[in-house]
Amino acid sequence: MAYIDPHIHMVSRTTDDYQAMAEAGCVAITEPAFWAGFDRSSPAGFYDYFRQLTEVEPKRAARYGIAHHCWLCINPKEAEDPVFAREVMGLIPEFLDKPNVLGIGEIGLNKNSRNELTILEEQIELAKQHDRLILVHTPHLEDKLKGTRITMDGISQPEWAVSVRWLTESDLPQRSVPGPRSCESGTKPSLPAGPWVGG
Ligand SMILES: [Zn+2]
Image (cartoon, rainbow, N blue to C red):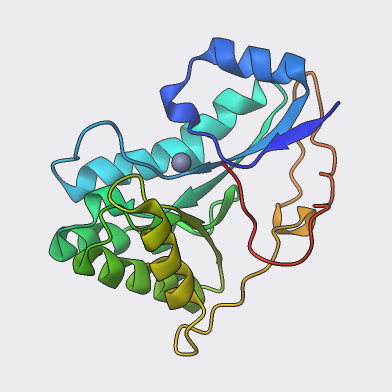
């Protein structure tokens, strides 16, 4: 059965994983920008990470017939310093037109702090300016339910004017992928309209 993995961090996975995913039927993935396991010391570290997500990883995935799509952002885990976060956000626009970029993500909250909320808001604004999708994750730390509520309440505020809807196959750029398996069109979500929820 062909399937799409909507949320996976392949930069931390081996090519053996790509092989196993292809054998299991994976035809496409979307990879959100994430924390690297350590705090990056400069925005330049993010610049190279964005190159990895938009240039290197799509080629690695294509060798296994998997179409690689990605989301770019500064993850909330590294967004506690707004000055640093804004420098990273300033790098994102030049990558948004790369063929595998879907939008801004994974954004959200981590410790549910005020600074994180400010940067979440600014990243939603960035997505709006460029008419891009956002991908939101729920907090790893502190109160997950509370953080999720804060995020959802914020997203539905009129001034943010974010329309929440399902990601559909038409959101994925149509790209042919060389390799053992071509990128077939995805399956339509079977749940009712609303935010797209995944693991
Ligand atoms: Zn993630």
